[in-house]
Image (cartoon, one colour):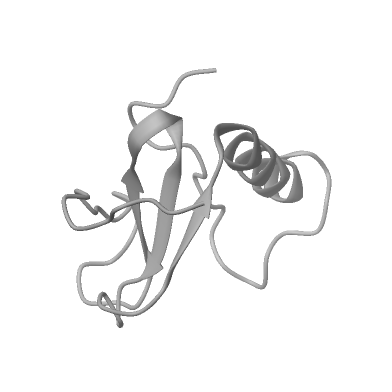
Length: 86
């Protein structure tokens, strides 16, 4: 699968500190979601199908909120993006 990322509008979570390293996300064509390293914006990006993104965010949410092991010693993550609905 090839998706053109030149027009992608990348953004960070509102929970991410402004100067900290984190990931950026972009809504892409056909419901796909791009994820990249904010420290390397010209580097590679992961591309998720809509079903893959749902599985990823659900898994992250369960790991933190569903009685699973919290990721490291960090504060709980907010895996869903502000305009994402289920």
